[in-house]
Length: 179
Image 1 (tube, rainbow, N blue to C red):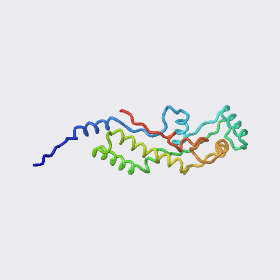
Image 2: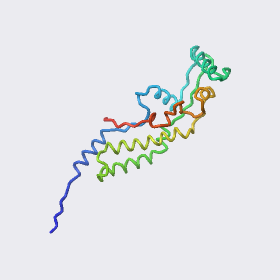
Image 3: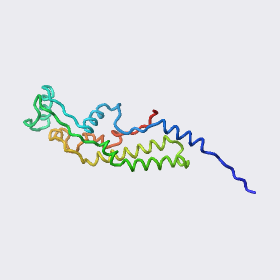
Image 4: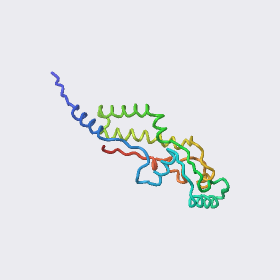
């Protein structure tokens, strides 16, 4: 007579799912890159800056340095406007159903033993969102840059600096943290 040897994986799965509930995935630009955080926030939400004498002087110097006319630059007391160019919120909102489905599929792999830890599933789901955001930035489908910004950067693509860091995984990163 054949004997069936049973291995109960349920306690381990329960422990792994409990760990997953105490972690969260973060995707974005993190505090160890403060300059990128500043650029990201100003573009994600837009901003209005009242130009003071020092900023007006700096803008004119940058314009002259880059061969750009200074007659249309904001004067002291006027507003410098950076339009909203949501690249994180809009990318997430547009693909929320896809991300949710992929997360469920990854946790199912944990349950099936195809992934050893919930950390792997969480990290991989973050990588999916990271790719979605990077693709959104690379698409360049945003409010156009100001002509002075184009002169300074040397190209017209919003959210992309001279190094192109926001359209890469160097700028948009993933981390899994305990909560």
